[in-house]
Image (cartoon, rainbow, N blue to C red):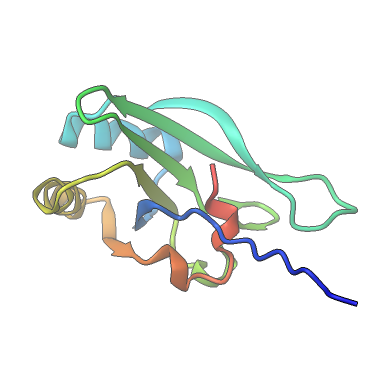
Length: 139
């Protein structure tokens, strides 16, 4: 009997920046809006099911859209009172997810702008494919 296998792959076509900052999410987004000229607004929370028998964990989520270039920016909290969005990155407070193409100059502008903020300890680009819990980042 022939067997057919279905191979699924995640579409992780986005830029991922991990940010460590000990600020409330709304204060954090306000500082980014002020420093980088963005306009993040809070949207519905990002829900992730970790166990089938338990309700999902909700993580705060903010959104900003740039019509020119059609870039979508999301800021998602990594922390919840009951766990982490990406457990293997438990030192990270927030993730900045950028959909669509972004050239190196724009990415460097964002990274340097984030790292200039006194309340941010570190902001660094990471490869989403290297994360064990990468499926939790799918929006």
